[in-house]
Image 1 (cartoon, helix red, strand yellow):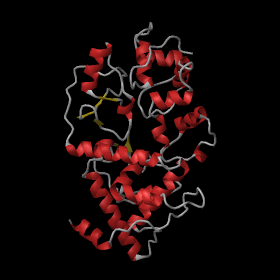
Image 2 (tube, helix red, strand yellow; image 1 turned 90 degrees about the vertical axis):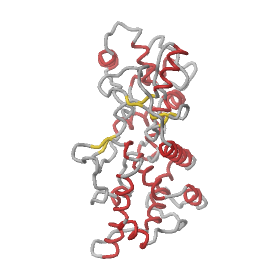
Image 3 (tube, rainbow, N blue to C red; image 1 turned 60 degrees about the vertical axis):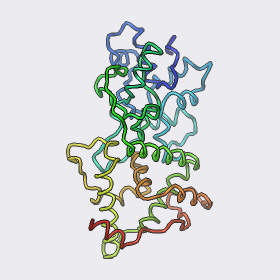
Length: 330
């Protein structure tokens, strides 16, 4: 139990509430308090579940249930966007979140995400003036967001090694129209996906992408299969490596900023229903290949089962091979 934590500020993240609680303690470092008192860390938004969140929620139990607290003060549930209940084998919020904490997303690209906490410099100055402190906003920690919608500036990254509240001295960078459009598009996709039953999201998305690229199987002995897979993977690599998606990922040392998405661990690996990649990978594929109305159209058809291999009726037109050839030649 965490006794007398500070009251949450509007849209504040639970980790930020904990830091403000730390400021009221005898400890000199936040990391020291977390380790000695709670045997825990809060070193990145990617760390999905901390026992301290449960204790913090308990402190506000007269006002919020655990499920409501998690929904309101964290962005944890974003990570289960393409995971159905069978992954967790338990419907309780606490067990689901505990499973998420040890769940390992496949990483075929040598890239990582969510290594730092993010903040808007303009929000930080306004919060400090209005509340006497800066704090981390839940909305800014969503892995699919890079822009503060309120001020139309790019979110800044915090120090990945030492947790502290946002500084008030950071200079803001105005988001380009491209950045804003990307932010709006990705958020719209997330909203649309959340309207689909959780057990069906991945089924429909993966099947629609298969229909769009017209690749349902891969036979290395079939020249047509090999050619089409290569063309599509080249398009994916080209559009990803030269697009607005790059800033959403931190590339590993072997990637050199241009990891070949057209490698053997590329597109076919992403669309393997047995694997679970970081949800941003699926959002990237959806945004590159599909249109919003195509996802909506697929909802007109009922699925026989919740199996990921269950085919969705043909609802989208495939990319023409001539378009792929021209795209590769460009």
